[in-house]
View 1 (cartoon, rainbow, N blue to C red):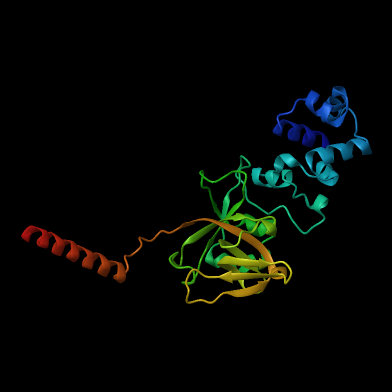
View 2 (cartoon, helix red, strand yellow):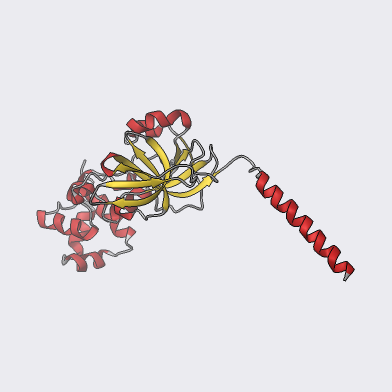
Length: 265
């Protein structure tokens, strides 16, 4: 099925343009825009190229993809220049779960699902089987996924906490010193600080918050996905550390001694 007509109509309305606005921008007649949007006429090669350039969508996408079925985050990604047919790269529209109202959900890659995720992260059928939830305060223009973390390498974020990450489409958007969830074929899912990205060597340097763990490098070519840390969810009440208790006890004793000295003056 050819989706060109409904696609260009939807994209025009998303930009809040009238048919007259679009006709002026593309140097076409308003009646031509109307005919194309309502399947009265078929677009010429020149018109396909003009719409593709204006919306930053590949001609293949405009014709063969039902844009109305994409989630808000997928549309936002495409509208910001990540169409794989235009970029000629390995960028992809992320497999995602949506509500009946076509709103993005946050998939939870549970401990049981983590082993399969390494090989099935791009499989829509696998993603569709994951548990999902929503956090209404997160942006609808971004795609999020949640991962439980293991071990103590990222303390004070405790083991078992759920990390919610924002999908990074372009690795050049990585900011050194920020926390990310990194998926590689060798190590699977890891939660680390990306200390440095060396484009010449093709390496990422990863480090832990826990200084007992030394930084290490991985090849960028091995990376399959990167999710920027947004927040973490912890369902256990944090315990006060012995060191903190000792400090507070000593401080209270010191305050008592100071009050006693002041009373004698």
